Length: 117
Image 1 (cartoon, helix red, strand yellow):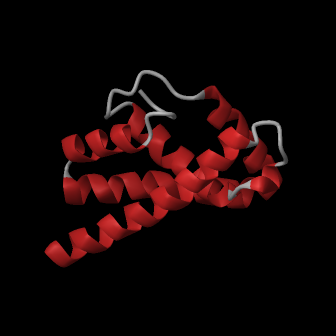
Image 2: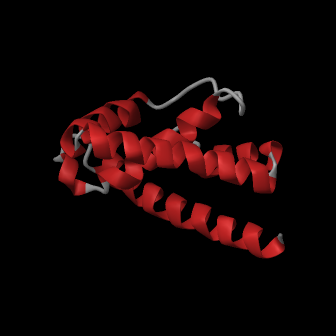
């Protein structure tokens, strides 16, 4: 079990690093082209944080992220967009099972204060 938790922790770390890069790019180039950041990572993050919003009691979500996710979804197409959003939501489920909801929600709120509150 500890090996699985470590592996899932690395998976979350990899996702959060890619997502953080996407968010920084988004903030720095708010009017720039969608290709300026990783749309797949952004949609996975969007799926993860949207799935977390109710169980983690997040009450606010950055509308710029929502708009960019919509543009990315259109850019990648519905098949890839849905797959990426579901992958992010699935990641929440896996991490919730391994780490526990309280720890996971705390960590997501701490890592992404620019997205959720």
